[in-house]
Image (cartoon, rainbow, N blue to C red):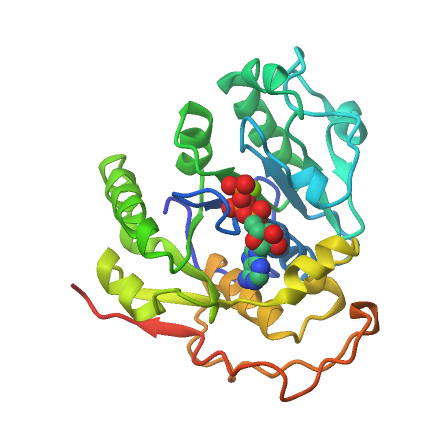
Amino acid sequence: MPGRTGVDVLGGAMSHGGRSVVVFSPRGGTGTTTLAIALATWLAGLRPGHNSVALLDFHLPFGNLAAMLGLAPAFTLGGADQHWTPADIGRVFTPTSLGCNVVASPNDPLVAESVTVLECASALAFASAHHDLMVVDIGSNLNEATLLALESATALVMVVNGDPQALPAAAAARATLGLLGIPVDDIVLVANRVGSVHQLDSGTIGRALGHRAIYEVPDSPDVALAVKKGRSLMRDWPDHPWSVAVGRIGELCLGNDVSGLPALPRDGRRSWLGRRTRRRGHQPIGPPTVAIGRP
Ligand SMILES: Nc1ncnc2c1ncn2[C@@H]1O[C@H](COP(=O)(O)OP(=O)(O)OP(=O)(O)O)[C@@H](O)[C@H]1O
Ligand SMILES: [Mg+2]
């Protein structure tokens, strides 16, 4: 990816005009927005109180990032003006309790249709000028706006699940990204919802896609429960296996080697779940990374 340097986020890379992590899935409903929010939360947690991360919703139409965060943003993409100045910071970015600032997509599909590539470019430039890091949820769309986001990405996260029917789309998407000049071997390939029933295992997915490594994110009912309760699993429960797995992906997006990190912990309990989570109540989720080997 252009600009990928492997510099630690707390070091020299945290200057303005920084990195962008683009989260993409070839199929809808795979967990792209959930992961984008969690990554932004994890990245924002590296510099709490610094407003260092912008989270942009480029899933047009029908992006639901703001809704998933329980936000009712006063500003969304689809406005006529794109020549923002520092005086517009408070207007364009919707702050969150997670430490990241959101650029929301419009609810109305007709407004979404009016969003131009120029506006998306302005949003990226404005977010980049005022944050150290950006996380962009592009959903399942490869269009002019999302290709723009991909072009400026320092890390691309592609989310797949173990649905056998989804594999051909994932393979086609990976090949298309290659044709577009994206270095596909650098893609951070994520198998989401590992451990859920009737899913292919990560090794099979990685081999089918010819990718050298695949990073597992476990299936957990706590993910949806947190959204339902308006909470953040990542912020409230950073040592939950799901949060730890997302943190590893965050490290990778920063270019950091995760191979030496300790094994994933089992989860404990958090009172807002409204129940006691038994220490032995979750299946072990296995190694976080499945090395596939070069095809
Ligand atoms: N690891 C996980 N474990 C359990 N549930 C998950 C996990 N990841 C995502 N989900 C759930 O899957 C559902 C879809 O997630 P999400 O909306 O993030 O997918 P998406 O790819 O952004 O979908 P869309 O294409 O509609 O934008 C949500 O209910 C979410 O809570
Ligand atoms: Mg989504």
